[in-house]
Length: 337
Ligand code: SF4
Image (tube, rainbow, N blue to C red; front, side):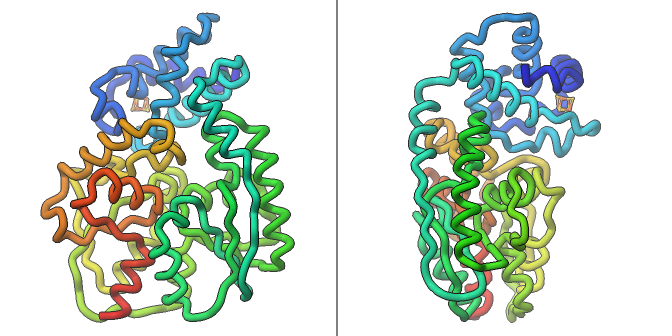
């Protein structure tokens, strides 16, 4: 079983409750099975050859995969890796829930298309596509033409759902489209896609940049200091060693960033780590958004910035009074002052 590689995690987490408060789903469901300890206890049972019951599968697909627990665990036990391994075991046992299988069939229907002209290729994921103000802000900031590529998730969603072979097939199609574009730099606003291109799959010979990195390279300056809150992206913070560029960029553009919520460890990304969490668990996504809204000081007045199109989408959908903007929109706002 894939979870056999995580025996150390199972042994450590099943008797530990230290990071329980960093489990976003656990914080809104109040179920122990939505915490690292609960999941490790289930994995311990699965290792004893207990059959995968629908309830067990459901637990692993309810996870938001924020990886906040792993990042802040003093011993960095890879509990996010354990969830992913359990999902792969569920898939290999043919026990994936019906809603997961249905979503997988949708995710496999990709058709990548390159448009426009320029040396830089901008990958537009589904959540960026649904919020056109993100890409139009980037175009205004850059001030030059760039090519775009779109047509579906690049394989990251399939990978986190435990369908690794399908993920690789999709990513190969994406690589071909990127190579055919002739561009040597690819930019994306989507941290999950950035992580996929950097860490999961091989995109050789092409420089991969998150949009915040790309904008930081343009050496822009802000004018007037403005208070704002920045919501960390799970993929940029917890999966990419606390990637500092978005905060540095906002600081250089005169934003004075205040801490959102009660601590810097909790994830407020509403399931970004699970990539398609809103599609799989819309009721939980709505509860996560309501939980984030509870921490806002002045909803509607505060400037709340995120580097994740997914998080912007979910918060604006389920907690519209919060008015969350993307980092591209925040930069444009600073330039236009
Ligand atoms: S990830 Fe670390 S802190 Fe959290 S339950 Fe496991 S051992 Fe404990």
